[in-house]
Image 1 (cartoon, rainbow, N blue to C red):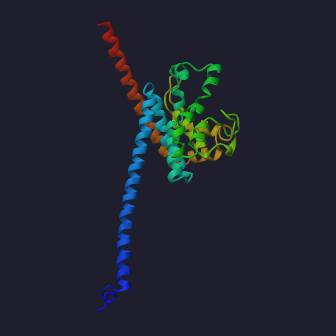
Image 2 (cartoon, rainbow, N blue to C red):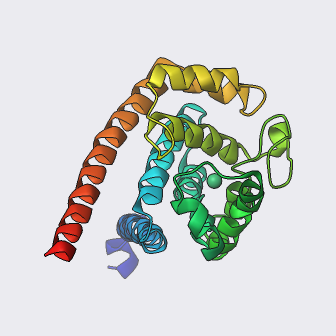
Image 3 (tube, protein in one colour):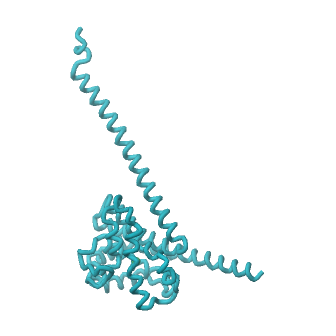
Amino acid sequence: MRIDSAFGEGRITGAALALAGALGAAWAVDARRRGKEARSMHRTLVDLLLNALTADDPSTARHSRRVADLSYALAAVCGMRGREMATLRVAALLHDLGKMDDRFEEMVRSSERLTPAQRREMEDHPHESAHIIGPLEKLHPGIGRIVASHHERWDGTGYPAGLRGEQIPREARIISVADVFDALSQPRSYHDALPVGEVLAKLRESAGTQFDPELVALAGTPSVMERWSAIARDGLRCEKAERAREKAQSDASEARQRA
Ligand SMILES: [Fe+2]
């Protein structure tokens, strides 16, 4: 009996293919697992970076996390997926890190409205944010440009570069709408939180001047508004609890000083 009659070519090829298939499947499962682990590690490191750089100003971290969630919901209805979405999320989380620079500290902490000179100085924070996240450019190509453009306006009157319309990266246009939605729907030291309906009306007033009109229209659709309203509600609960905690801490510290 010739050996190749017992292990005929067809059987050998079949076995080899089956083995290759099994190895390939195992490799794919492992690659998926490693990919998942790498993504999870990346998320953790970005969260860590945000926490570390906003340790003195946790309200900026809370704002940034809401802006990331709001941006994600709006980007999903724009059809963004995969790496584009991952880059958008990281850009939204880290867009205001530049404000943590020492020269902005007093302005960030102030409960007064900024003077025109302070506002002009503050206009440098998108560049500062882009500088801080520079090392992420390898993982998220284009992220620096997105972050640097989050205060550009659709009509070209924004800063720092005066880009207009579609010259502004779409991710930055999304962050811009989400950023203002959060700023108005949450309490700030110089204004109370506005109801979501009023915030949406304000966004619509600025569609075509400050904001991409198509994005404002999408933000007003029921599915996005439902998600955005839930984020605003959770944010209000969280801000209220944080303020109560901060007040209790400062009362306790005053009591200790008096004792
Ligand atoms: Fe900003």
